[in-house]
Image (tube, rainbow, N blue to C red; front, side):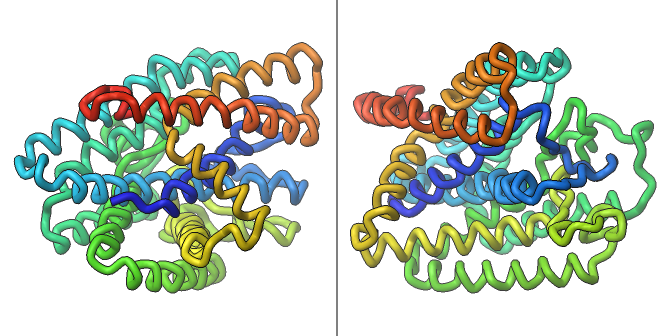
Length: 377
């Protein structure tokens, strides 16, 4: 079972992600990031810079949700072949391991080169987190929904509880806490458990989608609106548990400081906002698909491009890092340009170069045997 809107939504999120990475690779001198629970918040004086960062916040939770959703859809499509659950585990565990391997062998060294920081090579970042999710979720795919709900809630609500106790500092955070719940910001950027819960949420949505597609996409925008309302509540009246910092420390004189959120690990406020926005975005794309996007030519063309990107997600990620890294060397290091306009040009150039490459890779992958490792990337 393949949902075209899922590929398009994934492609849109990839395009948004590329904006953020273009800023990091090309505009290192003008951007801020690193919304960590244990650091001073990076306040923004420029609204455009901040809102390009804000919209990029949706990427990690969206990818985690779509991973869980894709896994249950793939399991449903291979129901006969994967009646033996061990085959399912082997497939997803291998894919997850490949993601982690690529993180440390290719992606982390690229980031390390771009930032001239050798420690980044050892960093547990977003691809490692997603690979770990795939491995963990594989053991829950065929469990009863009640077990999935319990694990989801524990995964999401335990990390803020640990931080809200107020007893953590650099001296008493160990490896296990880092990788599961609370990142240290140096070697661990994304902790697994909060996103594990989001992946399970995607899996649960997929279960509804398989049985009642119309109902699933009727509920999704409602859930998105509820999440946005809860975000507003948590930002106005939430405490340390919701925000992972004293709310007062997340405010400055700029009106957009209302949207300041802790991303590492994802605070409840952050998850409510990002998932709320993504659920609304996904719903809009789905309904445009249903009524026919060809009625709006610009939207139709954009979603066609997004669809190509979304069907080659891993390849897009790898290609965009290579290209942005090279553009960073050319634009920033050689030409000494680093304005937000230069970042925008770099982002557009990267997307233009990647498009035919993704089309080629999509067609190349289709020709491979279903057991080929290429089909896993």
